[in-house]
Image (cartoon, rainbow, N blue to C red; front, side):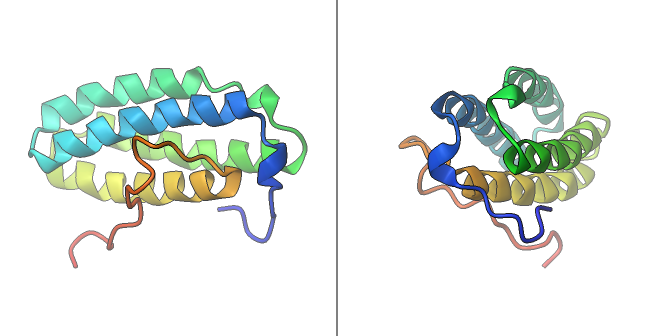
Length: 129
């Protein structure tokens, strides 16, 4: 996603980190829906993730940090739309695996951590293994 661009985490606005944290909170609820084989709930949860993403103020990011976020956001939105547009739990899970990788990368890149999910593992095995 980001190639070799390194972001100085200490210069990422704390408000951006908090806003991204709210996205992750909604993501975890999506994970729970998929874990419980609830495709309808997963579809509904994507709406909440989209709202949380819309509330992330990308203008808080400067230079490369902003460009990396814009690239990541394209992939994140694509995977959310795939989950939202599918009623098939298996298709939702495949898109969720990609979404998990995207979020893991941005969390690492921007230095976002939260006590609520600090031990949560975003990297998952490719679906079907």
